[in-house]
Amino acid sequence: MPDVDRARAWLLTVDGAPQSYVDLDAPTHLEFEYTRRLGHVLDTVAEPGRPLDVLHLGGGALTLPRYVAATRPGSRQDVVEADRGLLELVTEHLPLPDGTGVTVHGADARAWVEAAPDDSADVIVADVFGGSRVPAHLTSVAYAREAERVLRADGVYLANLADAAPFTFLRAQLATFGTVFQELALIAEPGVLRGRRFGNAVLVAAHHPIETAALTRLVASDAFPARLEHGPALREFIGGARPVRDEDAVPSPVPPDGAFGIG
Image 1 (cartoon, rainbow, N blue to C red):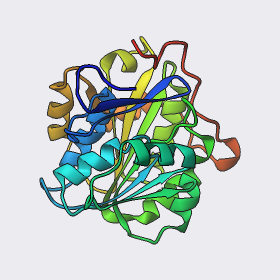
Image 2 (cartoon, rainbow, N blue to C red):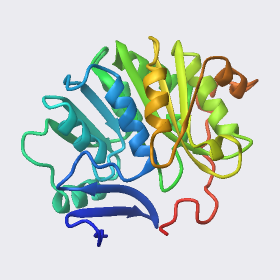
Image 3 (cartoon, rainbow, N blue to C red):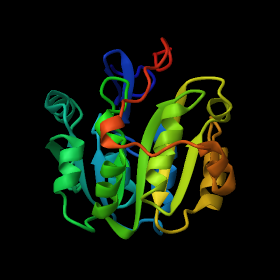
């Protein structure tokens, strides 16, 4: 769907849910709040402008790959999207400019990660939704270990998740990735964290200290301010949640009607 307010901007919906937004003339414009939060993390994982090797799980309209190509020229990026029809639609109607260093692959995200070489990525961005739910096979300790193997020692794992109080899914995801990574952070709107509504939350995981001070300032200054939780406060949030095994894995919860609708 074209955006009537921006000449070459487009909204991609999947099964009625807004999935991606792209402005072909302004690849650094991130319309959705959760993409801006992912963008803030991408801005802080290395010194500004340094090229990165990024693995994107979930393609959508290639919003974040375009952003990285613009903000970190020379980056090498692989995008893995299971919906080949979606990939064909996006690459036909919203083509990538030449020289972006982005390669798209029609494949299952977990299968791709399991086949990827050790220490081959600086960042993994997981933004995979089957309809409006995170698939179960991308939520387990076994999957988290494979992602950790693919990342370099100073790498960072990012995931776009969605949940609401009592946060059974989100807490279990934090517990799961906390068994594999030494450092965790969570970014979400205060209203979501207080249990007032269903919404997105960005998980950040690494083996080194996360740039929490810089990220706190960035997400707090957004048009829709968010909060970053880490350390003791995040451990308290996780509480007694248990890591997820493959045999127990379930998708993220079904969003309530209108949670991700188009206003």
